[in-house]
Length: 357
Image (cartoon, rainbow, N blue to C red; front, side):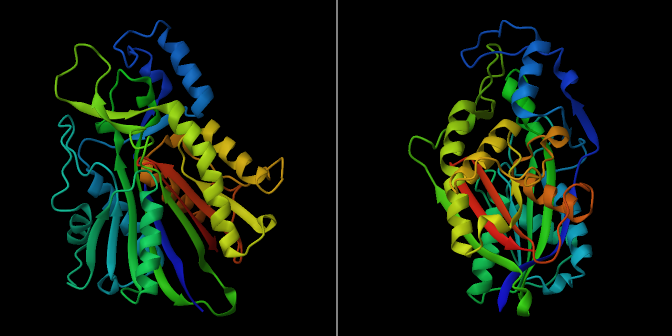
């Protein structure tokens, strides 16, 4: 049987570490422009308790979002041993394009995918390069898009990348800004005859809720009253995002798993978008509750948010690559294992993919 199979992975994790203590000298404001009447240390500790984040990574000034993508892609190509001139599509998921430090002006022309193709030196004009903007679920949606292209006969080898530079669009006066980080993850997916192994993508599920939910994550002015007029930053209605994710993501995950025909007891790992430790834990518990299981398996969910933060589209492919490379020894995969990818983010969008390793 022909299936979409991940044949190589790679990631770029910036070396610059930003610890929670680095924010202690800052001043945080409410969205109404009032100083939060708490010590910064208290705000930061409460933040850690909710999100699980103790440190995050910021990219150095000499690298761009597309530059991180190229670095991750190079590792994925080497891991898969694919001939780059045989790649049919390059799909790059991001949300804010390339930005130079301090500019706050997203640069998306040409597309990041075109820049990646150029940097990799791919000459084949039949290798189609394009971007996808789908919020934090962008990388997973790009994988789904590649799978659709394969089944339509439009491609057989794709390079799929999730890359994000959130450190350059955060409002340092907003405590939510401590969530965000930088990074890139990539994979090569191919349409292969899998024989009796039945490996590859088994099913997927996607939804978009764009009514009252559309503005839960958006761009807006700084919370600081004396901020530069006209400059906007990433903003998030945290409580709204949490409530939305908790009510909708488990349902999408169940829909995806049920479509695959795999019983929940055979699920080995769940690679969920690293948004917020408390929220991710709640989503997993709610997902298993839909199967009348009160306690999820203890080792079901690998996590990297504690030291990498939330790098949006990059969290899942980076986490998956780390497991592939044995960097999380407590989380190992064996041939035949069934895993579930799931994400939620701006739009609001949700997706899930069931995959046999």
